[in-house]
Image (cartoon, rainbow, N blue to C red; front, side, top):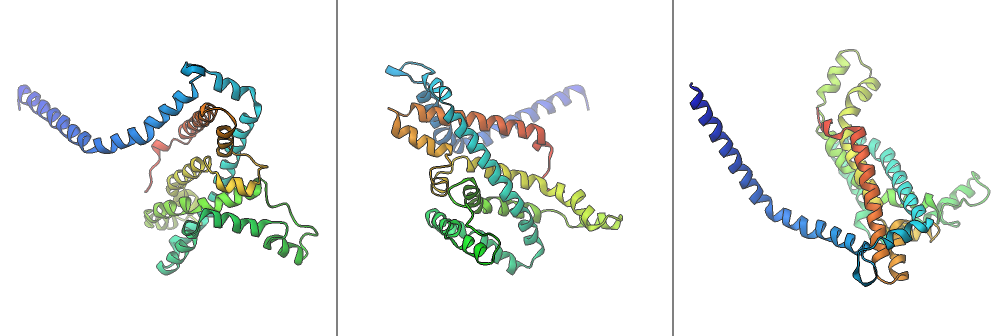
Length: 295
């Protein structure tokens, strides 16, 4: 084959590639337009509101006011701390549960899935008040602890960070367990058998083979819970009792306190920047782009 023929073939392949990319772009155009209108445009609108001063002029007054009031920075820190604790709590409970689901029969697995999905089958308000009944000073948990003599006085389980973490983790658990279960189901069981045939114990096989293969699903679920937990409003407002302020509650307070939406928009943008920075650093440290979801 001559050099001229090879050049013609390469040019034809490049034209085919450009045509294929054009077709794919046209197919994705409606979805991209929806994302642009629903996600990107509101973000830029919120950024403009946060930078709009008196008379509609460009100003950093909203951000300056937030930085001068240390309470807002403390609330952002509290929000990040609670979101992190919720993520850890849901991960510690959800990972063994997802692994158990892969070992059970389909009937038991369906029963566990239904039990896990119960928070989404009921109103979030009903769920929140159920936790108030459970964790209150005269709630079921304290009555049992006092009744069997574990504690002498009721424990302060309500209107604090503990209550927030428990209530939010309960509600967020399906978002971790179900994707992780799907990821675990895709792991080839022959990898564990191969490790065992090479002399590895069940514990070594799990930590050296199974756990690394399931880690991408676990990390994806953990990131999802962390991000969504940052915007919770109803559960922290009820279980925190006004003593534990999160960013969503502070944004609502800013809207009702200040004239306009500038302070609230600035709070939202500050949280967005902080979360984006955290996720970027975490992705670089964990190298998610080099991890595979299966064997």
